[in-house]
Image 1 (cartoon, chains in turn yellow, red, green):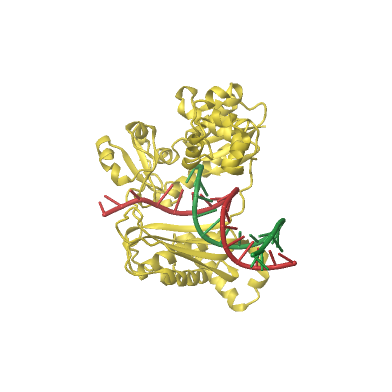
Image 2 (image 1 turned 90 degrees about the vertical axis):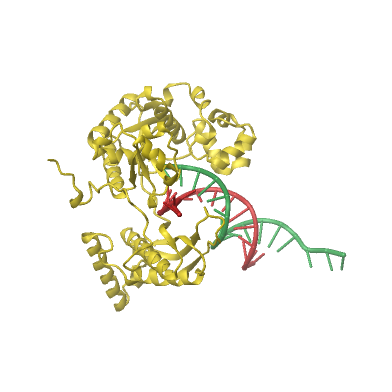
Length: 416
DNA sequence: TCTGGGGTCCTAGGACCC
DNA sequence: TCTGGGGTCCTAGGACCC
């Protein structure tokens, strides 16, 4: 079996272009939440030297000077476009693993090579408007590398099959940093052993790699040798944790504001739990000051609590979460971020007996259902809990967001 | 003034048990 | 004067991914 890795090109920028063709050929960037960092760049923006992950405020001048079109991230749009891309690919393959919002691994049979990849690419483009690249290899790691190679070499037209060439030549050109699963730390470690390229790692002594990098590193090295160690995972694994955290748009010092923000994030986590039919056994809460301002007093506490009975009811989650917040809150700091994570998740069905054992509980669940229903129909937080507050001065910045072209009736494109 | 968010896996080390 | 060893479970933190 061989793997293909299909990756949407500059995905968020491409999504913005689908409904705004004026952006074609124009440099585009998309910013992270809070309009913080650059997280997607069109080819034109890359050429102009906009670096990935750099803060927006440091780029403002370059944006202006070059007429770069800047967007806040619009996850409703990207999520929906992702579903369209994945749905299109499903029409062409039997087995597929959706790996991230803009990537999927496909299982290919012997007959599916370059020609198949080209057809897939053009179908996705035609049906969704999103350009993709396809890399084919005998392992997931090599498919990833093939994909990267396709992107780096425009003459390949976005498609490359590593199984049809002598791979060592290509591997010799790829730095360890650029291998899937090898980050900054690991590549620095490898460099100390004079392992600099993917070819070096492929040919390295396995025992040495195992020793230095553990099983993760060994797996990568074996995959480079064409030995598949990572299977295609068609079913998404059940979630082990759900989190919600956000930086503030303005500085926050008061407990009241932190409470409102945290309650809002906890309500989101509650919704996600109920959507996934999961219950949380533990909840943890954390606070952070701005670590980019080391001259200010720093404080980043966290704490957690266990529920006697796993729950997904927002009032209970908020009650416990806010208690935790009050425990760790100290006045006198400028807070930058707070967040919540629920862990030790269990399936709703596994504890349903006790849930419905009690009349009051039944009513609370019915109320929660009604609230969820209203919010789904009328928009998020149409009905909310008092602790979430109303003025939301702590809200993140999102000043350059495009419309939700595909998920809100009011935002539909009008053709005149 | 302004620096993202959500998630997984692995490992080391402590607590505890017999 | 002498103070085990082996195993499991849990947690915090590191590293990485997109």
